Image 1 (cartoon, rainbow, N blue to C red):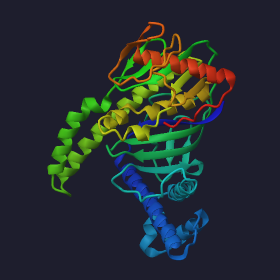
Image 2: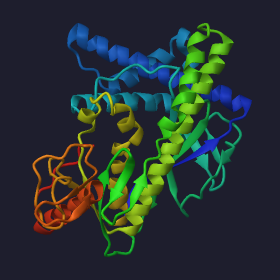
Image 3: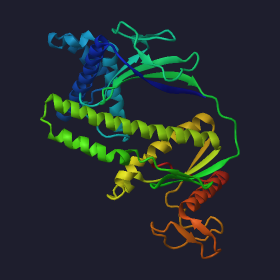
Image 4: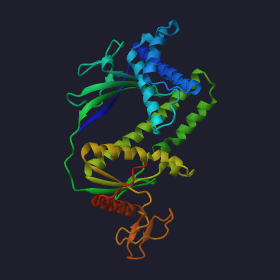
Length: 377
């Protein structure tokens, strides 16, 4: 299967490269914000829609003005790509897939995208336009043999780390077909409960670092705005946030890859995360679990490797239905973790029973070709 696949690595720029990158990030951000303001004003004042070609012409005219000559000091490609990203943002807004575009801040993550005309790759070294020396990249894994790099994105996160993302045309072979089938019930105490009886503990990456994060944030709040000490305190908070995100991502990728490798068919319950997060008692734990990201990874990995992922309607009574005889009880409060079926007398663990029901209904839906409710995670 031919796919576009991104490989992300840390890199360590020289002081000179760091200066050029900072200028490039700033120019790309300025172009995005300036043209966003231009397009917004054109609509509010004249009800006129301004597209990519108009903003591109406006950028060319802007570069010729003496007060904006600094836009010519960096590669033109990342600046031009910022306009394409703005066009995509508006397309998503008009397609009702996203909110109205917002201005980019220098305090958030910075990035610059280079197309093939603005970088050189010889199989071992990567050079970006106007950078001079190759980037010092930490190659944590090898690229596919003969991989064709189409786009390179350099970024700097709020923790001060530099990353390079290489978008490649990749050929992924489907994994050998297996016979194993699995149902997954997502939870908070246990991140995932499997129909085979396995319970996977929740990593609770945020919860485990919450007290330390609160302490750092309190220290940050006491620092004077604009001071060097505030900048240092802010960096410490950002580094801890990055550590939490990295640990969570590592857990999700390892688990989703293992389940895809081991099972041919996976059934999982669709959940309305936005509605569930309205519960003030559980919203922090639900956000920490990152169920939506887990399902997203299962979806694209199943597509890559020839697996089947089935989404089950969130209203299906998986917890209240006996997986042995099919009897459904009227009510089952959340504090009931084990129960005995009044019809057949089978003792059930609430979550394992739910996972088995999810698998059963998933196989039934797949076999009869019925419509499956779309994933709403």
